[in-house]
Image (tube, rainbow, N blue to C red; front, side, top):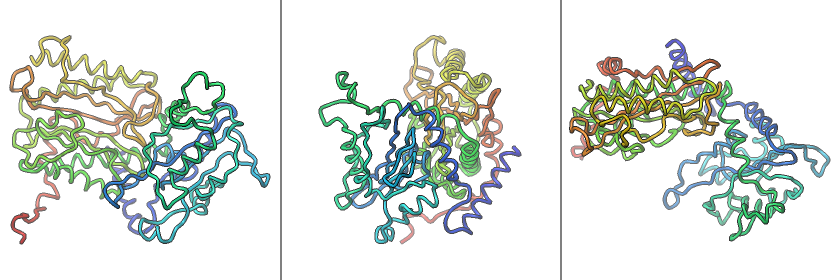
Length: 487
């Protein structure tokens, strides 16, 4: 609890600093972090190879409106660069430039453009990419086409294959579409109708679209101290959101209003984004695992509400789920199902330590839940086939909510444990169980000998949840005018 309170104070101070500094908060990852990540990648690259990373594409939302841009996590991990239309090359060995200097990495970024920046925001350009991100070999992306590198000399060119869903900005000859086309030309990428996997071409082709993923899985699955610090903040922010909703929720609220309270808390702490679309399901909507409509206009007095939300803080996302009674008090059946899910989670927690295959966490949870459902009469036997618990219970979190990682627990990996029971209406069991959906999801840092529960600030037991739900909320008197009476 002391550690959580210290984090909350740190987050509040960060928000204050942000208000005083018009440019940036002070707790972003530093350029040295990304430089070290590139060095670690270089260590793992095969002999005489180059790894190539492309920025994420810009996505159109409607007409001339784009979705808020989000950088490709691997590209951000390697560079800290948050803008589109860029390509990074990391070499295993030193390369020699035309002027005789040597380098082992090079990045091409979108150039400064005063007109575009007036509309869509400041750009770093090549100069500030060097100055602020520490990438000494940084050039505007228009230079990539002229970049005279003999790719045929490499034993391997490692990259993630293309999805062919990038728009071509007709007025920009160095956008992501063109960067990809130029890369394909430089590397003799197979033309349409051919494949990288055709066996007779294997000896002629140095393109490798498979080897980079396991390398990045290994790198990103084990977190550095800097990453753990940011994940702690993301988790704490998300837990505070759960607590504030517990205080504020009441029958008659909409799912979307509950979602808004969570996300208000995220923004108060300067969390830039959501790690994934917020899941807020009241009653039977909780039985839809990835329910993101959140459109039910009025939560009823007898329902549970399942809330799976994660703040993204400086690129790193939490993944927290709590299930609470809308009226503040679990019914007998709701409590029985909830306590069974909690028991499964706590038994899985006990075995979490380095070296454990992550699927063993699911095995433990499934055994307990199947036996418990049989004891309650929801199913006839622990060996019955059913869909009341249809998912695994653990994944990595980090720059992605389902982050890269090797699926064996390792020291300094950060994972979830999230058992759940979902009993839709009209299920083949007593009607008293219908519409009950419970998931409890927490985030864990794997330590040298076991684990640390990062999300303890959000209560997990039925007694603790009911106690928090009796507390007053700062939003109790926040009442907006009726839309039908504002004219």
